[in-house]
Image (cartoon, rainbow over all chains, first blue to last red; front, side, top):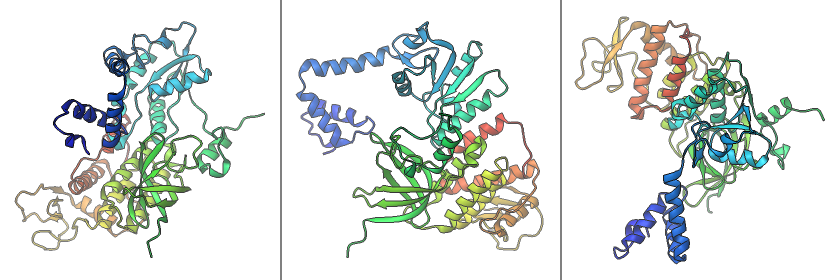
Length: 204
Length: 260
């Protein structure tokens, strides 16, 4: 049954299914299952979800420094005085900030690009938060830029574009090491990753 | 006897997109079956055996299983050629994306086109060897039209069929190629075609299918060839080429170079 074939007797249910169907990865069947699940939820739980969606849409904004999603600008990370103000780690998405924060290995600041250069999808540098990054760097406090885009072709192209744009500036530009994942296997590792793992080998 | 549910093939990876929780939807251009779209389950997890083997602009050996919903599944992928020199240069990567978009646009699903497969691989190799040169892409564009059965006529006027004499002519993808100065087809988008450009196009047409000839072109001639081929490609694709805008932006940001 598609959202269009919902009986007219329940237009509000049809509308909910239609809206859920717009979410990424949610097909018509999943949308129906979710809608019926929401109907069976106790009132307060369903309304809490609606309230959370409404709050996030009205409160969330971009941090004026790092461009991460936040309730107040500057965000919690940018406002922390103990953070190393001289290092900026560039990531693709807000979820990457969460992943890096979980490691507790980095105590500097971030800059979220909200995507990568993807010529096949018509995404160029102007569609990313690169202008904001370059203007942030003119303030002169930053000494090191750590590029942490994903090691995909599009992530690498974005890293190369940033490096090229900043060529000649007195700024240390690094990127995260490339190599073998923990729990991985040499047998299944591709040639490019293996050769980069060799290049980045470390003395024990 | 039922046909086998799994098959092996050799492919160039054109693009991929996230699919579901940790899967990838990959578009391949295979040597044996033309364009194939398949799901690689769990390929976005860092410890997947498929990770690194499914990056765009990579030649791979594949094992695929036929899926029920029309999408096949990648069961194994082994890297054959990573085109590593191409991936070390931003200009070259951009050209590679442009090539992938054209192969995706002109390649048909379940329709073998081995000349196009060989052409794409040879062009990626040439781009990696000389990332600055525009010639591999011009060669690719013309040969792409040829192996797709859309080669513009370069030797006779497409209207009156008279042999083209060595002088300036006109060109229109709408009517299928070069026109003599006497013919003016109605409703066709016509543009001038210099004798020099006609000679270069003929040279590209007559060259070896996968060996790019050595041609020195000044900037106006290179621009003319580029614009003629772009016009033909976009006419047949019936849409603008997305990756072109980033390639043009990189050009603008760089100092003007010499075409060769």
